[in-house]
View 1: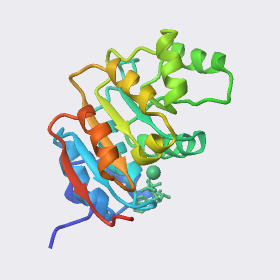
View 2 (view 1 turned 45 degrees about the vertical axis):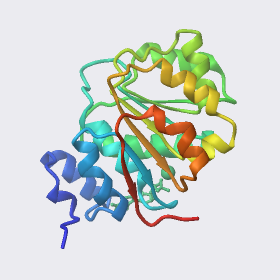
View 3 (view 1 turned 180 degrees about the vertical axis):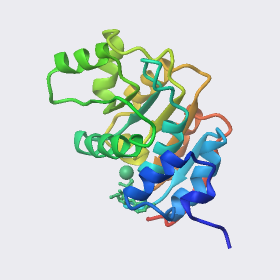
View 4 (view 1 turned 180 degrees about the horizontal axis):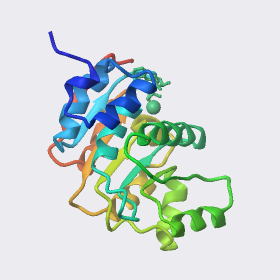
Length: 212
Ligand code: ADP
Ligand code: MG
């Protein structure tokens, strides 16, 4: 049987110790399927139900690729709502304790621009945001993605259903073409596949504990 302990991955002691402190010892099925491929640098389309541990499935690979001494946005997660963005940012901050000083900034609508701009100027490693507000920052040139290496489309089905497709396509055009792209979705019907599959390069598709 496959070993699903986090310690079976080639992770630094400090990173493992933090996971263990968070109560993470065994990978969830989606983590066990996605993490080795994500760590190997593959683009992924991952379909798994809510509550299956998708945040760590993309967050761990993104954090391990991060250079904390480089004050530039290196990872970005797009989420459908402010609440989900806040949840993802919180989880990434907890996971990042095993790396060092990692600054995660949320860029969501419904809150003033100015503090977000100030946070970006101060230096962010990871941005978690909703498509409309992220696009807004890109158009004002308050967000620079030149050093981005990992792009995550979280809850891609909900983002598409909510009408964010054009914003996402615009954001992707502003991302470096040499990057890792990870798409996570609870469902992945054909119309969403057609709309989003070109954001990825030769993606590996993983489906575990899916919902319909
Ligand atoms: P999803 O995005 O698939 O809905 P989340 O990433 O939000 O799921 O994770 C759901 C919950 O499970 C969170 O509270 C998270 O902290 C917890 N969790 C994730 N992975 C593990 C793990 N390997 N061991 C224990 N708890 C975990
Ligand atoms: Mg999630």
